[in-house]
Structure formats: structure tokens, C-alpha cells
Length: 249
Image (cartoon, rainbow, N blue to C red):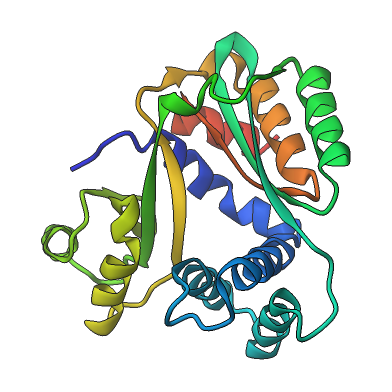
């Protein structure tokens, strides 16, 4: 069973390299702070904070870091005030790109994002220009280990998932946007090891980017390297062969 998962596949294959940038903790801490600030420091009544904490635990963030971020968000400890801003644009050959940010200076961030788009052959667009091309989904990743694929797919669907993808080393379980917590909780309660849980965006349709993959990935990598950027999404697909070749260059 597989839906519009090409971008999630690309992101999964790039994941190891992204982790080496050392920015995962910073991004999660910012999300925890904003979640706690906007919805309070109790994850039992704050779904966004609960999700951020789950992401932190999946990334093996120490509990002390999580607690400190919550306290900064609620004002119990002094901290920088971050705001969510989403930007939309186009990459090479009209590839639609969404950039989610958390920043303490919107003017700085939009200037940096615009500069990156321009430098790497893309352009920033108005809000709403490409967002309609994506569906918001929940994502839970479970290591394959020795779990049977057909059995795991049925378990995921019974838990409330609406799509299931087998990657090289993980099962990707996609859920309706509002059902992520319920599906995650059900799988966790049933004893499955959760490697990642997050909200994501999946393109409704994809464009093959093999012919210009290098220049497109340079744009995406530059956006992801921006300190204020949390996530980047694109409505493209790149073949495994091209990804492997580029990763070895």
C-alpha cells in the first residue's frame, strides 16, 4: 500500500546526513518552547507539546533538556520568544516548496529564505501559492527489525492509519492530521518501538526531478541549513539510483 510518499522517501534517505548537521536538538527545543508557551506546559492537555516531546524522545534528547525547554516556554525560565512562519516558493522547473520556520526575528528569516531561493535558482512566492498542493498528515516510523510487513500494515490500518510504506529499514505509517496522537499512542501501548513521530506534508502529486536533482537538492539543503528553518517540503520525486549517486559524490 502506498500513497504520495516520494518526498517522505527522499527525506528518509537524507535523514542520516541531516542528523550530522547537529541541528535536530535545536529545532526540537524551539518547538517545545513554542508549544509550551502557546498551550501550557502540561502535555496531557497540550497535544502540540505532547507531539514535540515524543519527537524529542525519539531523537534521544535528555529529559533535562526537555524540561528546561518547557520551562522556558512557560516563562519559568528566561528564554527567547520564537514565532511560527511558513514560506512558499518554487524550485527548479516549477517544483513547489514549503518552508516551515521558527524564528525570533521574522525580517531576518524572510530575508535569508528569499536569498537562498534566489541564489539556488528558485523564487519565493506569495502565501497560498503552493500550500494547496500538499496534504497535512501524521507520520509514525517503526524500525522493521523482524516485523512482518503484511502483518504490520494491517496493525497500522486497524490503529487508524490511512497509508503504509515500507522503506529500507523502517515502516512509515501515515495518519490523518488529527489522528496522529491516537495512532501513535495505540502502537506504543501495543509495545512497538517508535523511531519517529511528527506532523508532515505530503504532495498530492509529484514531479520527477532526476534531470535536475543536484541543483534542486542544493536549494533544499541550503534551506535546511538555515538556522530558523524547521522543515522543508517539495512536490518532487528522485529515483533511488540518482540519490545514491549524488550521496557518493
